[in-house]
Amino acid sequence: MWRLLSARAALRGVWRAEERRGRAESVTEAAAGAMERAVVRCVPSEPKLSLSFALADGSHKNMQRDQSEPLGRVLSRIATNALKGQAKVIAAKKSRKNRPNASGGAACAGPGAEPAAPCEPVVKLYYREEPVAEDVLNVDAWQDGAVLQIGDVKYKVERNPPAFTELRLPRYIMAGFPVCPKLSLEFGDPASSLFRWYREAKPGATEPEGEGPSSLSPSSASPRWTETGVNERVYTPSNADIGLRLKLRCTPGNGQRFGPSRELESVCPVEAGPGTCTFDHRHLYTKKVTDGSLIRTVSYNLLADTYAQTEFSRTVLYPYCAPYALELDYRQNLIQKELTGYNADLICLQEVDRAVFTDSLVPALEAFGLEGAFRVKQHEGLATFYRKSKFSLLSQHDISFHEALQSDPLHKELLEKLALYPAAQERVFQRSSVLQVLVLQSTKDSSKKICVANTHLYWHPKGGYIRLIQIAVALAHIRHVSWDVYPGIPVIFCGDFNSTPSTGMYHFVINGNIPEEHEDWASNGEEERCNMSLTHFFKLRSACGEPAYTNYVGGFHGCLDYIFIDLNALEVEQVIPLPSHEEVTTHQALPSVSHPSDHIALVSDLKWK
Image 1 (cartoon, rainbow, N blue to C red):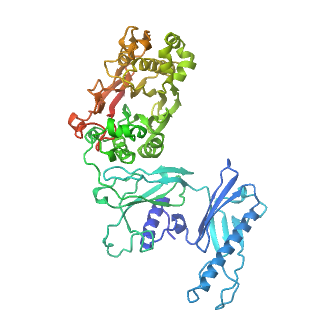
Image 2: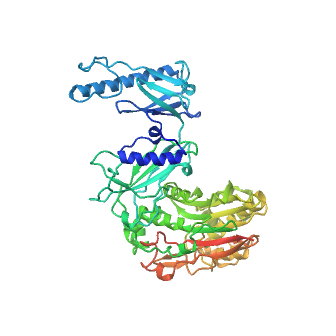
């Protein structure tokens, strides 16, 4: 028995001992000696509890029982299962008479006799060395630290230990790009859990002198695995890993104890990366997280998979892009590396598929200290992430533009103006664009709050007047949140506004007004003209200025994306340089094998005034 200096140190030692012995026993079980483990999951909101353990015959049992059921019924069922297991063992012995008798459960036969019919084992539950009465209900009987005895085998009961409810590796893995497993825990948290990465041993590789096989499986037919030396949640494969599969071993924890370990292997071997990417040079400016006085902010249209994976996209919009580079599995590697490399405090994303948010962005960015919120539009939506060490989420105030315009009294005057132009009003009501608004509070200074808005305005080149209506609704709603709900808090407004600096939308945001004679009110012809004058009371500017372009495709390039900041409270510390024109056009246009979107991320370090 080890003298445990700490649970984490003990687990590391146990893992190494397990690998040398070629076994995959649980860490807690190894540290506890001969005591087996019986895991009980019992949640008040659910009618049933689950009981999981391994019988002496090697079979694994996972029982679902009513919490209100008397203990005796469960013990009887366990005895029946154990009896069946013994019968299988005895049947196997009869066919292998010359083999040693299997352990676990005595049969009713004398020494040297033929295996006879098994006897039902005694099954008891003890708590603090006293037997638990069989009329006690399951919810009360199965306490943490109780001991279940099945024949000669004893099991330590662990009630609600930390456990993974989901654990998955990405399908496509590339050298030089972070591998971020998707994981969900119950009764635990990732920060208190243990991770260990292995790579498949190269064919013909020899074991270090004095070491046994490094595979965690004793079968010689199974792959052999060697340690990578990385014991963190995220692993970035090197060129040495190309052609080899990866294995991750995870032990869930909660700061007090650890649950059963799980292992998972990558489906495919590590592939070679694309070489230099458009964002690699930008990462030189963002190697570290900013100090508390700065807010590194990113705005980025990711190019939704639902739009990238169409015949029109492959043949008309992006015919210059290699088909594999439009595949989501490939692009996700680039997106994860690009976003995590910015070490941002705020990340506002547009064109985010729901599955990409849950399966890719959340696992990757959570591993680097960010938490996110999602707002669906139709087939895709908006996502905003914030650094948990700097901000906490106070509230969220998302709206759909057309719904807010029709139902919120805040927009009554604008709706009355629009109602004078029925054709334009109908077009505006047909659009599904949304606005995501988060109010964040500084974790260091509770008096500092900030309103972070994120949007993706209507895309059509002739939709200028629709974008004017949408931005008017957005600014009125943001003012309500930042003045009425949280008086006087500053605003950061990010997004893909689908408007160049020469448009009415940009003029309105920067100057605070738009005259009724502006040409954008007739952007789709005289039939839909809707002349009106609008004003707002913010003092906003574009943190990144007016770049030559933030969107670069075969048939168009221009500045469509902005980070608008409240000049009354915020100022720009630095703007991270955009990729050079040479980098953007290396593969003709965007997206490409070295850039995952048709847009370019805006990155700026902002400072409280």
